[in-house]
Amino acid sequence: MPYSGFLIGVIASIIWGLTPIFFKMMNQFAPLEVVAHRVVWTLVVMLVLAYFTHRMVRLYHALTTWRELRSIIISGSVMALNWFTFIYAVNADHIIEASLGYYIYPLMVVGVGVFGLGEKLHRLEWLAVGLAFLGVVLKAYENGGAPLVSLTVSCSFTLYTLLNKTRETGPIVGLLAESMVLTPLAVVFLVMLALDGTGRFVLGGSVDTSLALMTGVVTAVPLAMFIASSRAIGIAVSGLLFYLAPTLHLMCGVMIYGEPFTLLDGYAFGLIWLALVVLGYKNFSRKTSPAAE
Image (cartoon, rainbow, N blue to C red):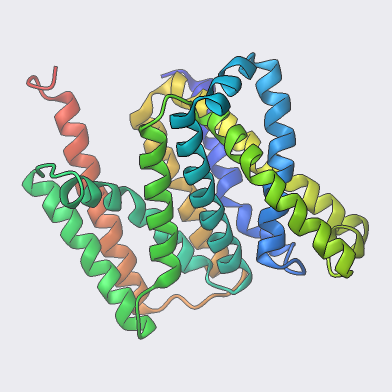
């Protein structure tokens, strides 16, 4: 295994995993204002990245082909919903619930394959889905209702993943194009806040201005690093590294911000983790069996 690629993937996952700390520092911003800044400054960073990696021709194709542009507009809207939900969760002390959403995500992809696309599951995959469902039921019981943050995070990220798989545009150009189509709305919203005197970009002084500018770096840099890592170490290993991020989210919520983690939380997360182990074992055994070769 290329150890430099593995290290890059670990660093990218750690950056993602520590984003609750970053967004918690922006708790004076309204969640929608953070999303607007994230869109605008991600566009700036991604334009620089796309230029130096010679992807501008691909961007032109994405924005001038109606099928691709339509997919980008939809996926960009879903991405913004995912960002908003996560930022809201961080500043409303629901980091643990948000982390659960990212754990559920791969199992939800499997569920969509079965119930939406008519795919057939192996008995171990059914077991994984069943365990995950029980975990969500336990969390719903503890919450006194559906864990809306977890389900919104997982559903939006699942839909975003599926939309990305149905188009030609890759993740780098895709994020750039998504940011580009959302930027006019984001700029209008930020200008309205500035005129109203409620925008934190100027009102909050140099600290808030710097944090707003950094949203682009926090979004774009780990994505570029993770893509480079995936190419070096393969999808299977990089997929395992993905779980480092929600694990760190969970640790931030419990250890840094003191969010309650009850016995029922332990059972719910335990069922989800067991489901992921079962799913991972099934995928690994399929890839390493003689029949798969």
